[in-house]
Image (cartoon, rainbow, N blue to C red):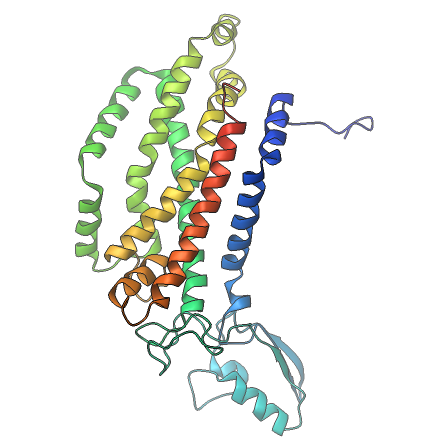
Length: 348
């Protein structure tokens, strides 16, 4: 702030487009729906976990505070020597019998996504809100944590692929030459390699895939379209009069790129952001559905969909829960994407 005036970092045109975006009803509905799902997924421990969110344990030595749903404590941390896993209900009962006023705050749904119960393929009930799967695991818990995995995958895939694609595309379009030629040949090579074949090959070699490995494989292909579109934008902008004028006046390459090229080239690319996130979520869902995604017992929407397909005749809830969640997620993201495309269209 200088002289009582707040500096505005956004151009009037950007502010106008932002206001037009927010005036659209589908933008507001999409943001509200996506924000709700995102919040539920990222705070999954609050809604579903077998351990307390907060534990205040009063002993002879004083009061100690724990966060068992977030921190993995050893049994020895609670003075338990005859077990490896802490049963917090028994721990609280033991403290109360000893005259200590220990207390805890629990999640709304008292299951985590990995614990197996005797209630195999149980229908929805007050005990299991969305029923259980073929191993007795709570579907509500697996859906919440699975949504978090899917959202994290989609957002990370977008962030890394867009960053890499923009950097490579700018370098291609601005400097051209040998670098542009080599990258174009690399793109052609990547485009003729079947994506699913690479996934199956790596899956067979590694004997299982983790989150980072699956993300890395998808990233090998995800940056290509972004780099190609960015290259085309920069090639067109580099020939414009304003860029030629800056070059003639002795402007540095970094000034031309960051002040004149990127602000104009990024706008049409950013409108693709919601669709890229949606595509990343869909890619992981398909891989998990086919059995080439994350290794069990990682919760995922695709894994629940595969179970729903296998048990559709006698456990319809296994299919309805992930299908509804995936549909709401995709619809909310696409509503935001359509509104962004209309508001930030360069032709507007």
